[in-house]
Image (cartoon, rainbow, N blue to C red; front, side, top):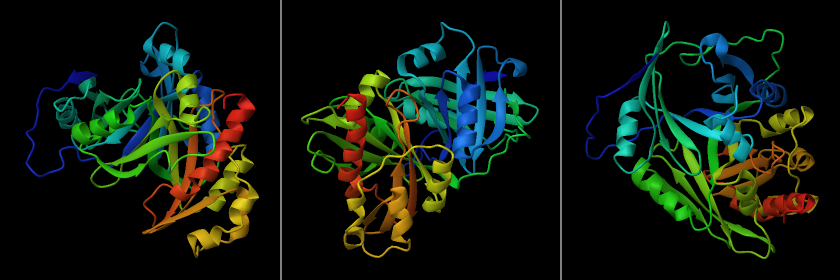
Length: 377
């Protein structure tokens, strides 16, 4: 059942008013959740966890929960037309609706953020069943996206009330080594980046830890600007992109056109062995962007010593970049929808805290080749 919570806490000066424990889950609104769940299981190595739908008393939608280590996706589809979920899919295609964040007190998280100017998406609610109590609330962010605050300390069920265990005993694909959400990237409209930077600073207490201008992220034809926002403990990071002037259409402009608005561009998923993960994903049909082989000719001169052999990195197209803390390895998928919108990043950090600035030019040229093939450059 659902109960609106009325009690509120006062904030102690000098403390983090919105302590976040990480990403609880990412929820996608999709046209066919059953098939989408199968895709993430078979292609990315997720496992079946939970299901909600008419059989569990949820009459307007079906949701499938899949998980790999600390990485949880919820795939939700409407069962009829003429509702908010169906309209979201009609406008945007399959895409991210909720970025759910783990908190100790969902009511206080809502109060703290709404009192600082956030639009309320969901007032604090208690959801209860035989396995305990879960509290959730939410605020609006860019586009039609929302942050949910999830409080689980008194809940011991499989996912949350309204869901039952989904144990697909006949289909248990091996995992691919994906661990958790490293960061989620949002694309916003022209001249909107600083507005959302201010939102995360003032409403959620985040800090701007990195800034990339149109000189950092540009090619001969297109450019964009980006600022990376991080919460206090660094568990939650949200880069925010906006278009910049260029000779041709940038990847952000293409996204905004085909998504029909602002939204989540990509989700970066961490691994401890990117060679193994990418090789496994490729064998399952996941397609990745490829940079020219010349990228590797002077790689070690640019980034210095790395632990990995260069040959498999070149074979798989994995990119490498270094900052003052160490280095990282990364690779970006092609869009996983027919609309050129949502894609995924696979990232392995070997000390680096940055986001691959040294790879931007090669990466964006690869994206432009894909845009040109689609006729959208």
